[in-house]
Amino acid sequence: MLVPDISIGGCVIKAGQTRQVRLEVAKLYTDTDFSVPVHVIHTRKPGPKVFVSAAIHGDELNGIEIIRRLINLKTFKVTAGTLILVPMVNVYGVLYQSRYLPDRRDLNRSFPGSPKGSLASRLAHMFLTEIVSLCECGIDLHTGAIHRSNLPQIRANLMDTETLSLAKAFGVPVLLNANIRDQSLRQSAEEHNTRILLYEAGEALRFDEVSIRAGVNGVINVLAKLGMVRLRRKVKSFTPYIANKSSWVRANASGIFNSLKKLGDQVDKGTPLATIGSPFGEIIALVKAAQAGIIIGKQNIPLVQEGEAVFHIAFFSEPDNDVAEDIGMMQEALQTESPVLE
Ligand SMILES: [Zn+2]
Image (cartoon, rainbow, N blue to C red; front, side, top):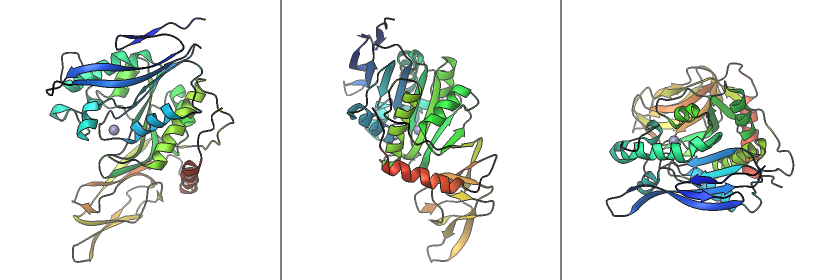
């Protein structure tokens, strides 16, 4: 079967070609172009079309490094289908080291967008029509916010069995069955029948080595599951924990925040998570877990105001005593293992 050409950003890519193209979004007031760089691998063998995107939030940098490493990995060879890599969707935000576009518009709340809307809306529209709508599946790479770290995790619609099987293949310890937010990429993608895995790991404006390695391995594992790359041997697979709910624990006082727990720790209802102290040294409050679960996100800055979200805890319907131990083992494996490509 002959694989047809594809067209991205007005550029025709023939079967068997690997090309870099630019999606022109707008002209900036500096008289320079705002364009999104795209790396396309369009193989001769029929197969799924998949995109991997990073920096939809311009200050979330781990994903940029994940895509850079994939492109330069000598052993990484796409043998079927089409892979579209977009290392920086929100180029404007990357330039300003900011999550947002002008007017503090959040790109992930600007879908489906319009060619006549705000800059965020135009970018959303272009990304959706040029990239997302071509693909059966997409992996969108994110990190925690500024001063907040996330345990490597996949958020997706796990009620869909195909999405669930891809999420499991990614190979991170925790899968979160996350609700769709209005005007998010996931919402618009689903309307185009594009399945989305959202990878969350690490912190904004930082590179986190474990998160990056887990991301590189995860993307490769999903592509292998889809038959687009071949693995030399079967990867050691862990059974991830599936959470249907999560919530933030908030600081119950203002002061110096001293965390007693780390990402991946298992907590019970009432477990002390952190102390909050005065500048004079005495402890004025204890932050406790409201429910049993696993810490999947936490604040890193050691200062808090009352009401600030400090720990993100995922809840599991079937609590298991070994969750924390398993997560520890999985994290250790991610630190040492590299992808096992053919
Ligand atoms: Zn994000």
